[in-house]
Image (cartoon, rainbow, N blue to C red; front, side, top):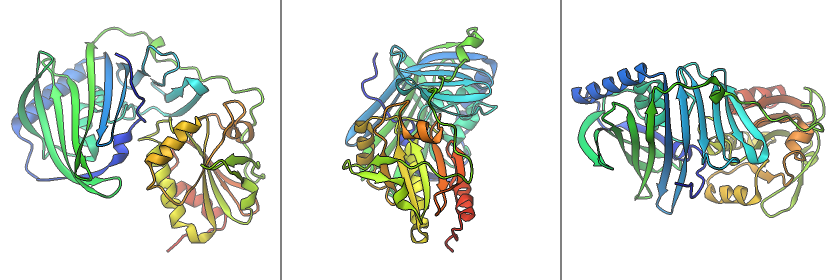
Length: 395
C-alpha cells in the first residue's frame, strides 16, 4: 500500500487545541482491567515492529501518511514514512538523540531523546506511545483531562476478521480556531492485548471529521540490531558559514513574499527583529503550525514595541509553502517570507550557519545579534532576548 498524499506531521494535534471531561465519573472497572492487561503486555515486550497508517479526514479533504515502525525499550525508534521511497522522511531515536530527517534536502531536526520514549510520535501516535507506556499514552491522548476518570468499556467491534475490545472516552473542548467541538476517542485493543488502532472523531464548523492511527502486521518481541537505530547527520556544505557570534552584525539577505516581491533584512534597521528559519515539513513537538502560531502570538503581543517577526521558509518548495499559507489564514502578525534557494545555497545555511530547523535569531535595533536559538524554542526564552535588546514587555 502506497502513500497517496503526505500529511503534515501532527496536523490534528494543532487542530485539537484542548478538551475537558464531560463527566468526572470514575473509569469503569472493565476498562481499567483491559488497560492493565495492555500495560502488562507492553512492559513484557522489549521490541515491536509494524506497519503504520495515519489518516485525518477534514470536511474538505483527507490527508494520509503510512510507513514502518521499529521500536525498542526504553526509547529507541526507527520510523520511516513511505519506506519504499528512499527520499521519504525518517524519525530515529538512538537512545540519546531524537532525529527527524528529510532526505530530499539533507536537512534534519534534533532534540534530546526522552528517557521513556515520550517524544517519539507520528501524528497523534497513541498506538506508538502505548508501547513505551500505555497508561501515559491513554491519559494524554488528544489533550484530554490527563486522567482516566471518563474512560469506559464500549463493547467489541470486529474489523478484518479480528474482534477488538473498545475503550472509549467522550470529551468536549475547542479546536485551534476557538470553535467548540465534541470529541469521541475509541481505542481498539486486540486479542494480543496490544493497542492496534486509535480513532478520534470531532466536528469542524458542525461537520464531522476524524483521525485514525493504526498499526498493522504487528511483530512483537523480535530481536533487533542496534544498527537499526543509528543515524549519521549529513555533512554540511564546505561553504556553509559558521553561526554568527553574539554581538556581531546579522548577515543581510533578500527573501521573497507570497507575491514574489523582494524583502531585505536591513530594511528593518531601527526595529528589533525576531528572525525564524523554518519549513513546512519538519516535525517538532507537534508540527510547524503550532510553532508559527506561537510566533504569531508573540508578534501581536509586541506589535506596538517596534518588534518585527520574520518567518523565512527554507529548504522547501514554493508550492508546499504557499499551500501551507492558504491552509492557515488565521495566523496573522508575522511577515511570511520564503528563501527560493536550494539546500547548500540557502540563507539559513550559507549566512547563518543553520544545520537543523527551526532556528531563531533576535536582532537588535543596530542590526547586531543578541539571541540565537536552535530547535522549537519557547516564547519565554525569546522574550528574554527581547529584553536584552531593550524591549519593554507589554503590561
